[in-house]
Image 1 (cartoon, helix red, strand yellow):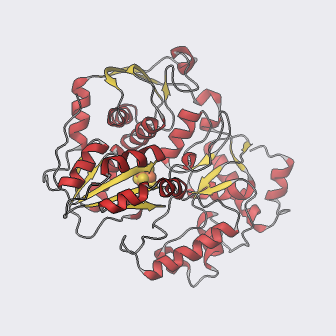
Image 2 (cartoon, protein in one colour; image 1 turned 90 degrees about the vertical axis):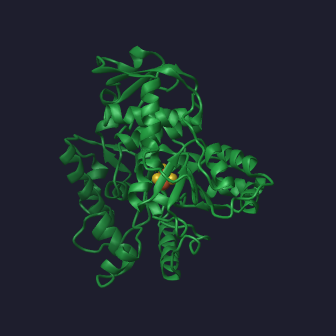
Image 3 (cartoon, rainbow, N blue to C red; image 1 turned 120 degrees about the vertical axis):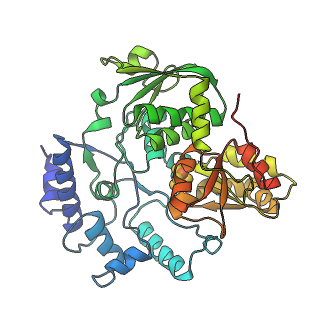
Length: 429
Ligand code: F3S
């Protein structure tokens, strides 16, 4: 790779051993990718230095916990180096437990005390504790064209597609190294030539509600895998929540990191603009039969209509969704056999608290949790056998991870299940 003077200096150790190890890792990474240079980045989202009890114990005998894990695990260094404060604007994504409701999640005091120590280290290194998979809802909103280095597939696809900022799906190692250096390889979605569409998707059915967007996303991901879909047809203006569900689903059934919607997303004012010099490899139709097939797949893990857990907030709920759920629950009580956990970011929860939504949900018998979710934290209420979900992404992962039956439907279907204990959802017409 061709390095600039400041990059060479970091690699030579002029800014300390921590940044030197970070540059060494990034150079190896860039060379493996075939990148010729770095781009500067001042917007990084990762999980720097964080650990659970298993990781803590694995590194316990080697040295100082946080620095040992950051050095040996994140930076792939063979020695522990002092880890300096970050030099680029950086945030911490979701983690494994709620900072207040950890005991309800089945976590131990020991795990919580470790979480607190870990979090103090993250803050001390200058990293923002957003603790969410939706940093764009918690104060980190890049601008079009901005070079970012983000982990978390649902956040990456939102960043690239809806905002038009530029990031590959980075890993823990590259994001932790980028936080110390402000550099990431100039490769993949950082470059214009990799951002054009490859597959043409035409929806023959109307796509308007959140559930429609989730199902279309799940279909698109399965159809294009890791390619770049350009979506047209009977789609109407998606808002933030619809994009969030569409992208998360497409990044789950496939590996979609960037999509274009003609007339709606920033790099797709026209079909020609979306495809640029590329010819579509394939045109794929999404009709009534395809929609029904996706609904059936997402409900294929459900047989027992008696629901004992309702999980909402994948990706983490927006304040609009908190408002919707609070309205649906206002003055009502959950069925005695069900639990409802709603996941969001700390930032959105603070607004939900101020608006009384958290209290409304709590008065009905539900809980609002932050920082994590059932899949990422492997946390479900004790004894859960059947879960109801409004997220295609969570329906993709949770039943397999936790050995549960699962139903997929609208947020309203899920709240009905929470109130009655029974699943009554149907494929939307
Ligand atoms: Fe977020 Fe968990 Fe879904 S981390 S995107 S809520 S799987």
